[in-house]
Image 1 (cartoon, helix red, strand yellow):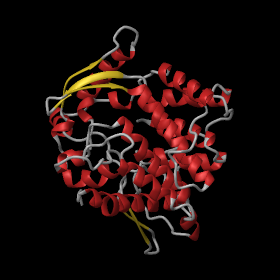
Image 2 (cartoon, helix red, strand yellow; image 1 turned 120 degrees about the vertical axis):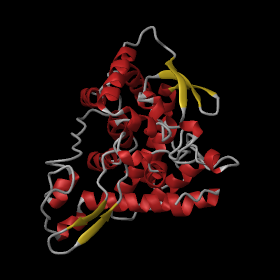
Image 3 (cartoon, one colour; image 1 turned 90 degrees about the vertical axis):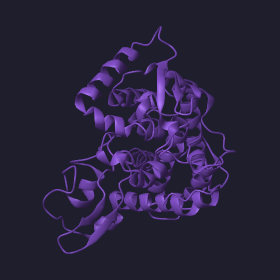
Length: 357
């Protein structure tokens, strides 16, 4: 899933689920920031203070994509949550929609309501949870299940996005060395290109095990949006059972489905802007307000506000630590990332027979 869903749709689901606008923005920002928090290691301050961070994503064609040990701590807990079902580690590592493991992870986040970074943890968890629908059938470790052949779209009659996808693919091949691309394919859904992340796509492929797989993203994405809304409703109601919550109102669900089905630009930022315009215009029943602008890096970003750093990385000069850093969204998000990864890797997966780190 891309920013149009992780930020735009999650914001809408959070508002329809009962969160205030500021709280919905925090949850949606944390949900999307999982894809943008690519700077790992210690953040060092000029007075000697330090703050530990984990990267929750790598760039798609980053060389680190070929290092399986690192991927187990990045792609597996945040993007390709294993379902823990099967006889072998390879089978148990496969991501499946709304698995028992995913529901346990959501319950962990709901139990954190009292923490000062509880909303950030909720956003982090929702990213992983909704990705179980988009990334189903793939895994965050090297696996034959991630190998793709005979990749095609099912509906070639009405969708000019196929032409745009072909041009986009050519652009990627031109931009990146082919050997790097080839090494990246066994990880996640790299070999399936952007098909898993496009809300409207109908497509099919054959995986490395020889199994034919057919996918229709729209109903899967709508179920993910509905379940995200249920999670928020349980959060607001202080309930432990989120699955029994009502979910998206029928009229809002129908409008959102129509929006996702027709919003087919290959540029995810343009798709986000369409969603923002729809929310501001009241096109989705139950919400009529502007969705705040999302700033991943640079001026106005969570990192800049917390540290003064405008660079995409940590810059050349050390920033000054202040007590305000401790109450910042940046600190709260990164602590939520650490808590989330520990819960997945050390608490939830070992119970399912998965020791990945």
